[in-house]
Length: 125
Image 1 (cartoon, rainbow, N blue to C red):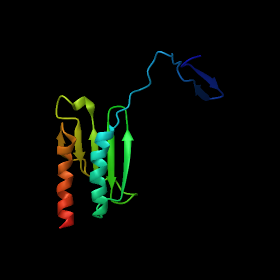
Image 2: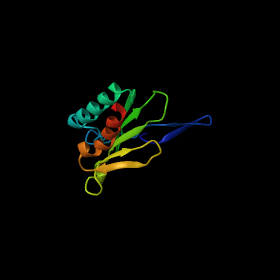
Image 3: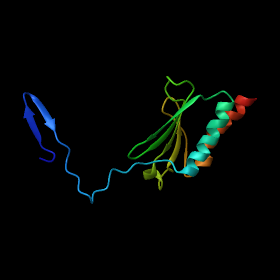
Image 4: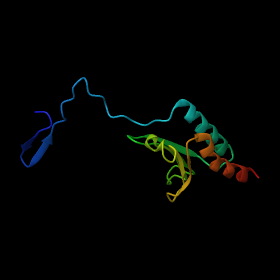
């Protein structure tokens, strides 16, 4: 009964589709170790400056997101996104602000993160 449902007193029970051993699981986009090293280096400096306090990482089907928070219960201050499908167009890395505005987009993660490092220089002054 792969993928078919059975009606049990007004309640439908769904069975998962049969998976063959040759099918690959759904792909996920994730940050590579070198990418995370750059991001966490910036994160550490911003924490030391008292600007950031928490982060979250989401690895989804077509995007990996590193979210930065001032406080845990808030919406993210910034999102650093990796979208490999945009590699040949605008660049796969982007820094997005609180209101959804793209602050910087490009092919080089280090160059894209510079928009946040400028905020670090102002915070230290």
